[in-house]
Length: 167
Image (cartoon, rainbow, N blue to C red; front, side, top):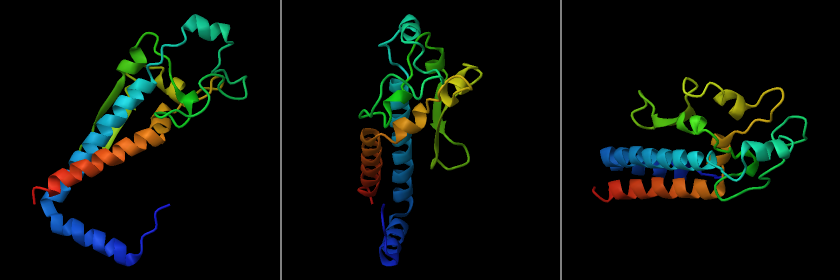
C-alpha cells in the first residue's frame, strides 16, 4: 500500500503542473506502451500449446466445474498471477478476437483490451466460465502478475522521463 502525506501529494501535483504539456504527452505515451505490453502478455497467456483437445479429454476436462478448481497450470508464473487462468490455443479464433486500443474520448489516458465476441462468440464462456466450467480471467491474472506489473510501471516511467527530458 502506498501512503502519501498531503504535502507529498501537493508536491507531485505541482510538479505535474510545471511539466505541463510534455508531462501529459509522456503520461499518454506511457499508457499506450503499458497497454500494448499488457495486450502482448495476454495474447501470450492465451497461446498455450502444451495440451491438445485430446489431452484435455484424457485429463478429465481439467477446467470442468465438477473439480474443486482448475487442475492444470497451478501456481503463479512471471506473467500470470494464477497459472490456472492460462488458455490453450487450438483453432486460434479466440486469440484472434483479442483487440486492444486507446479508448476514444479519454485523450489517450485509457487503454482497452477485450475479446470481440463477434469474432469468437464463445469468448465470454471461456473467460467468465459457465455453470459447468471454471472461469479463466486471463486479463486480470496477467495484469496482476508481478513481472508484468513491473514491466508496465517501468515503461510508463521511461515514457514520462523521456517526455520531460525535452522540457
